[in-house]
Length: 431
Figure 1 (cartoon, rainbow, N blue to C red):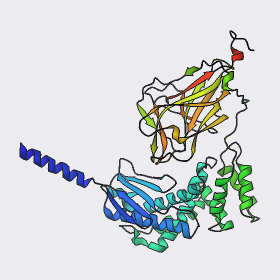
Figure 2 (cartoon, one colour; figure 1 turned 60 degrees about the vertical axis):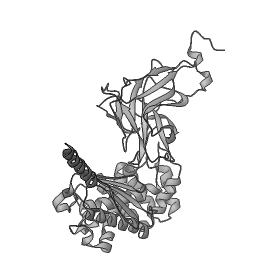
Figure 3 (cartoon, helix red, strand yellow; figure 1 turned 135 degrees about the vertical axis):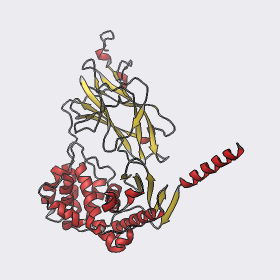
Figure 4 (spheres, one colour; figure 1 turned 90 degrees about the vertical axis):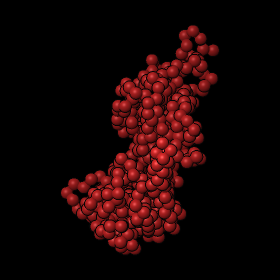
């Protein structure tokens, strides 16, 4: 029996050693990897470091001093970034790290593509006005350019099983642009390419930086963006370029026709009614990148005012809350914004999920309305909002300005408080 226990202990120890995290570090890149051949961790580190240097030297972007990459085996093959300094690559097996002709996955291009996102988002942290096509088109364009320049530096031997990844750069993008019906992302990449032809390789970073500092009206971002663009660069070709790209690049968050009316808390009766669709029992939680958590509600009349929003959730990511706000939007039944309420991320803790009560300026609601919460999450920052087991049909995934999609897996644990002005209480005559 003692011998059997010893053998099992040795097997357990060897398993722990097999799955222990390893670190590969070079200048400007560090890869943490588990159960992945070292040569692929090395290739990914050198690719990220070269792509980062190209973005700085050729295009003048403010890139992180060190790019951190988390490399893991998982049930899914996926690559994404936090938009600041972090990449996570998960693959199903070693086979899925091999060159595209064997794996069907374009890792070198993918790493360069994500560097394009980092280059943009570090200068433009608030980019809700950009359409998905504009954001992905930019990463496709810059990623393709970076592929070319990384190839010129490193050659085919960069990847453990060498291949001609130069074909995945601008050569492929130009073929896509020449196709009969290019996708919106490819069209957007072509429009970013046109901008670079006008302002030069180092001319885009100042434009993105200026946009990032500007005050943008989410209802109609185009006017401010155009003004900033033309103030940043005086090239006479830019007005025509902007007129062409605005319909594809700019996402408008239209304001509702419902007239916004607010009161002071002291003007309310002080006996709020609580509305909820969830049953109070969490079965799972979600963070929605590029979207939001939304719930439909119905008021019993037209004299009710939103006073609180309660969310059962848990913040994740770095221990220090990000220095940005998340948003709660009061929308009409068509998902158009009535009011926007920003709150600091620090309202949520990382220790355990809990109900967080957020008080808002008392705002009149229509008979049917939607409460939407958007955290602009990434892998390293966000809030997991919990949901119960049974969907009532009132929970949605989406953001204001676009049609929300029904969330079929339950009801978000998002509740609200409604109160009435004292003048609406027939038993309490107004003074």
